[in-house]
Image 1 (cartoon, helix red, strand yellow):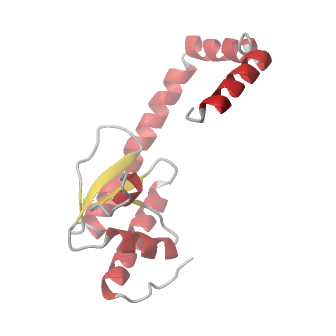
Image 2 (spheres, helix red, strand yellow):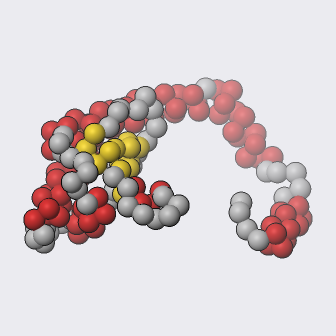
Image 3 (tube, one colour):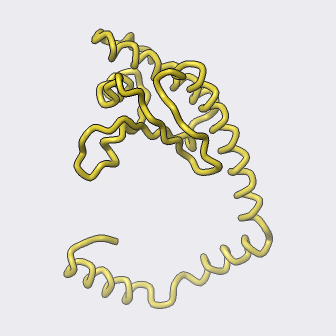
Length: 156
């Protein structure tokens, strides 16, 4: 936690009073799930699901935005970092994409100085494969609109 020192001190005091020994019931339940292999099975299921979603996103990006984005497919995780072609205003593109109900994080959101960067972060953990494909199509429409200066066609 990051907070002013007096606030941290007070939170530690309250935590000590309210939870001296932890939650034994929760700790036992988690231990049982680990011993039974439930956590490991869940991790394997989620890994397969994320790999499938990532593959769907990658295929859609290559089909619809191949000249606009370049990237290396990560071996794991739940997001894809991309490099955006230098002739694209990634911040304007992100704004247009929002108007089409699709969001991605332009590089500026991760820069300490908040200056524009030719990068974008695309997450794929929460969306289905069809939602990812639709999202990429919307991103492509938003890119066309951001390049021509016209308002994108709104679809809901």
